[in-house]
Figure 1: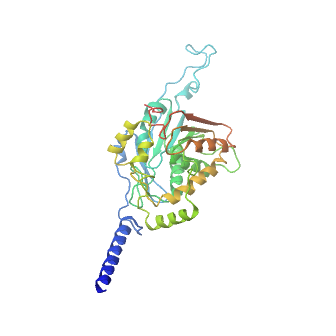
Figure 2: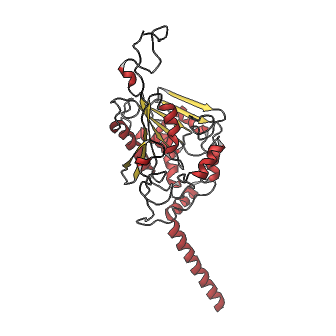
Figure 3: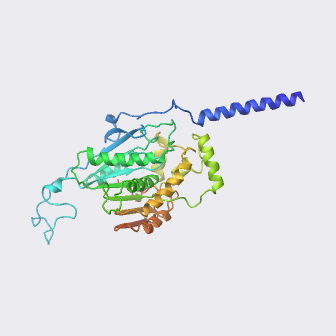
Length: 361
């Protein structure tokens, strides 16, 4: 009997030690010594962008990249030699001194696990030469931006991610030297699509069709609604309790990790190089993010019904991460949009910009 009691006490002590170890590894702490600030010198940005930092409202340092629009030669006046038969210049080129001005700016918002360096090809080889400046940034706890919780990807306050999108967009409009009135477009990819939609909704003028910040919204493989399979309410409540107790614990291999990452790309060679060589990719989905992410997706679906901006939706029909159903539903729901277009790419994967089908370079 004594032996059994001793064994039970030892087992209880071991369980307590294990529980403490799990809590210390994954559980919340008032001040996290593992938190970090910006993790690189912006003056030495590896992409050659004009990089700088902004401090978000919650105190996190955001790493921002800017690729300016390439200089463009002024167009000849209409009717000059070299124009078409009707005397009109190329569409969008403008005339005279206005042709040298940037045609617009595009603010890119990446999805979960990714970071802003991967928008460099789009900026340098497509948008920049066409006269568009590109501004993008790493979400908190992603890439080179700071983190309050000391774990890549762990940032339960989804609303502050939306705030950061608005902050970067306003900085791009007001502080980067573009002429007043330069059109500003917002491009969101994957989870970044939900954040972009929420940012557009948050900054919309009440009751008006003119948006005070953005000229249009472009969403690629956007997670603008809940997944097809949702946990029942009891399981979701348990998930919230587990996430509150152990926010740093991994949510599971089926949700984040190498398999889902590789399945996002049509170009498997590109995906393998990125996964094997890029230490800034978020390797797992922390449990603490999950119960906050699902309500944000619901909110973005509701925001789509109020959207009055010109809208372009891009989706691959073989997207294994975010169903193309969500883009079709958003296109149907966005009744306030006077100008909306849905493009479904046959054979397209989740990451269209990096896939062979839609590779900018």
